[in-house]
Image 1 (cartoon, rainbow, N blue to C red):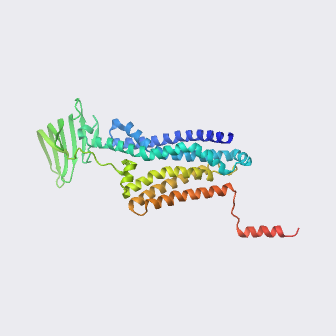
Image 2 (cartoon, one colour):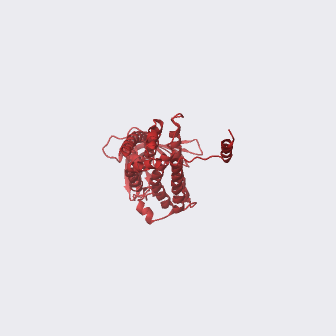
Image 3 (cartoon, one colour):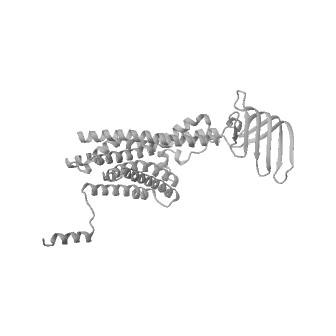
Length: 370
C-alpha cells in the first residue's frame, strides 16, 4: 500500500539521520568523560577506546529510544507542515490508521531495545568493571606511564618513573611524593621494583634518599639508603563483586532485593517507554503550519527528558523502599500509555472542549430573530 510504504520510508530516513547525530554527540561526551577517568588513573590509557566502545554500547538503548521518538515526531510534523497529512486524512485514513505503519516500522527497534537493555547493558558494565578492577589491582609502578606524574590508587602518593626496562614491575629514576596524617615525604631512587608476598605488594627502592617533614615541625630530615621497602597495597587479588548494573537480568529476577528490582525496573522501563513514546509522538505531532517550526521538537525533547527522569526517579524510589516494583511500573508506564491513547483518541475524533458560557452565547445568537 502506498500509504504504508511512503510513511515507512520517511521514518527510516529520519531515524537514520537522527541516530547518526545522537551517536556522534554521545561518543563525544563519553570520550571526554573516559579521558578524564584515564587522567585520574581509573582507566588504563591504552584501553580508552575499549572502555569508550563498551560505554556507548551500554547507552545504545537510550539512544535508540530517543531516535525513534524524535524521528516519529519529526516525520509526522513535516507531513502536517507540507499538507501531506491533510491529503491522507481526507482520503479516509484517520489518525489511528497511522498507528499500524508506525508499529510495523518500530517493532524490530523495540525488540532490539529490550534485548540491549536486558542483556547487553549488564554485559557492558561487567566488562568495563573488569577492566577498571584489573587496572586498579596493578602495582603503582605498573600504572604509571613513563615520563608522567601519576597519582597512586589510594590518592596519597604521586609517582614519576622513567621506565627503560622490559619488565612492567621495574623502573628507573623513581620519584615519590607522599602525604599522610604524620607529615610529608619525598623519596627519590635510582631503581625501583615491585615484589609480592602473599596478598601484599612492596615497592623496593635502591640507591636513593628520603626527605621527611613532620606535620608539627618545620624541621627537615634527610636520609640516604641503599635499599628501602614500602608497602604498596594489601588488597586481595580476588575479583570484586559486581554491582546491580553489571548483574544479569535473570539473576536480578532470582534475587528480588530492592537494588535488584530497582535495576530491573529501569531496564524494562526503557523498552516500555519506547513503545509509549511512539503512541505519544503520533498524538502530539499535530502542529500549526503558520506557527513556529521548532516548537514541536522542543516539546518532544521536553517530554522525553521528563519521562526518562521519571524512570530514574522510580528506580531510586524502589531502591529506597518508597515504591513497589509492580506499583511503579503500573502507575508510570500504564499511566503514560493511558494518557497517550486518550490524547490520540481525542485527536482522531477531533474532539474539542467548549466552555459552557461560550456554548450558551452561541445558542442565543443562533436563536435570535433575523
